[in-house]
Length: 113
Image (cartoon, rainbow, N blue to C red; front, side, top):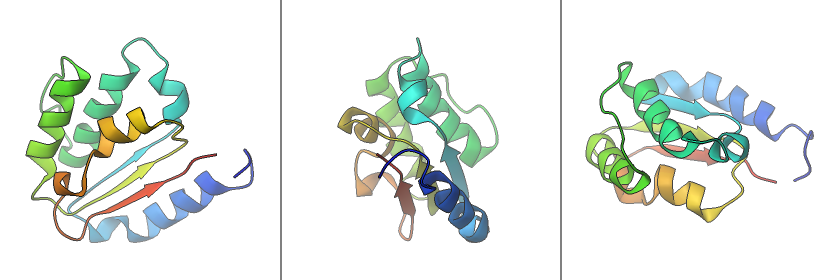
């Protein structure tokens, strides 16, 4: 939908309401903007891991390596992830490539224009 109609606000409210029911959670804001930054892509992958594990687990060298790490570390965890302001398939592929990446009962919420 159009910018400014409240998609992020609704996603944030849901995240805050149900987040504690998951083993880990992450709210990645302004993905469209961050993605364009110099190392924004791997930074988003690292932020996702940091939010869920509460510590810097791995330094991600490349997007492709990041995909392997995310799948490896999250596949047994029940997580809630919000991907805010997504505007390309590449972003989805890098941050939540497939259902197999996440443990049973995980939920991914995406906001997009």
